[in-house]
Image 1 (cartoon, rainbow, N blue to C red):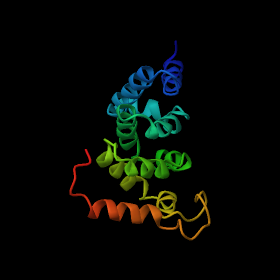
Image 2: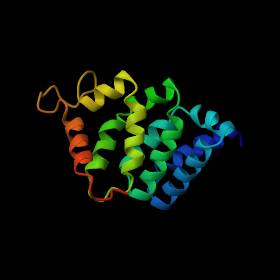
Image 3: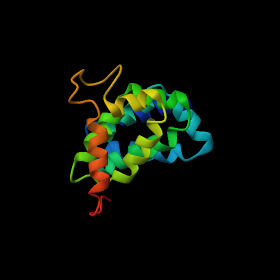
Amino acid sequence: ASMAGVLDELVGLLTDKNPKVRIMAAQQCLAMSTDVDQVEKLKRVPSAIPQLCKLVGDVNSIATRAISALINLSNDSMSLDRMNKSFVVPKLMEGLADEGCKHRRLSVMLLANLTKTPAGSNQLLGVGAGAEAADSVLVGMHVRKLVAWFLGQGRSGE
């Protein structure tokens, strides 16, 4: 099988019904994202970043690997654009709001990378194209949650 075919198959496994399959696929994507030669091959699979973004809301063990891979993949504008088009900012914020979240530090790192772009900043602020609603109550909601979380961070979020 060609390398492209193998990568397409790997990315397809990210959506498998079995969490054990998803965790292995996410682990492989994470490993590829740390390898200079492999990371570019992974980025060339159009569905890789959107599928990893969907795993941000998965169980902690899978989400942690997906977010780590996305951090490693978020070093160019094309990849950031794909992440923003997958609306990963609201998913990260949902994870941060969950008391059982084990990947807060990683989520904030990815948010920092995403909000370097206008699209990512707009998603965080809840304004512009793709905002969940034009309702003014929601504008700034994510920022308020982040500030409250940082101010109340006496407890460990890892």
